Length: 214
Image (cartoon, rainbow, N blue to C red; front, top):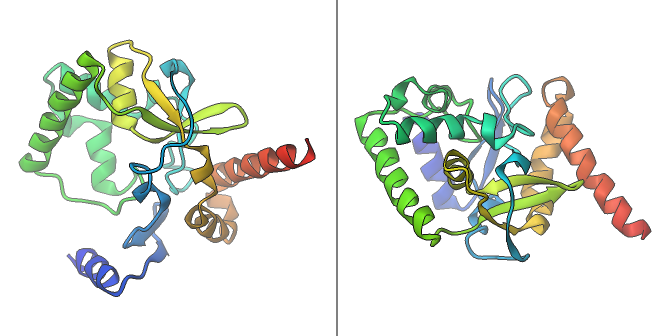
C-alpha cells in the first residue's frame, strides 16, 4: 500500500525515483524507455528462432536475474506451458517470483484470482493472434550479435511453446536510453551483486567502441 501511494505521488509530481531493494533496483514512477517501445519501431521485422532469444535486463541482483537466460528456460515459458495445459499457475515460478519481486523490475505484487483470470484472458487473446499471425512483433535489442527480448516476453514464450519462430523487430537504439545507464551507475556502487548486468553493459560499450573504430 505504501509503495502504491509513493508511486502515485511520484507520478503526480512527474518525478522518477530509483531505489535498491533486497532483490534489485526498483523504481517509483518508472519512466524507462519501455514506455516508448510501442511507438518507436527501428529495424526490419524478421523471424528469429526461439533458441536464439534471450532474456534482457531486469535490474535484479545476480541471484535473481534472468538476464542472458534463454526464453526456453524462462519463467515466462513455463507459465505459457501451464496456461496451455490448464494447470494451476499459482504453482508456477512466474507467480512465485512475481509475489517476491524477483521476476522483473516490478516491486512485489499481490496475486489473487482476478490476476490469474487476467493472465488466462491475455493468454487466450495472444494465442488467437499468434494462430492468425496478427500479433505484434517481439522487440529485441542486439548486443554482440545476441538477441535479447526487450518487450514481448510472453509472446516469445508462447511462440516457443507452439514451436514457432516469432516475428521480431530490432529496437537496439533504445538500449542506450539514459534510464538504463542511470541504473548502471547505481549497479557500479554494488558490483558484487550486479556482475551479470555490469558484464552486459560492458558488452554494449564494446559494441560502441567497435562501431567507432570501423
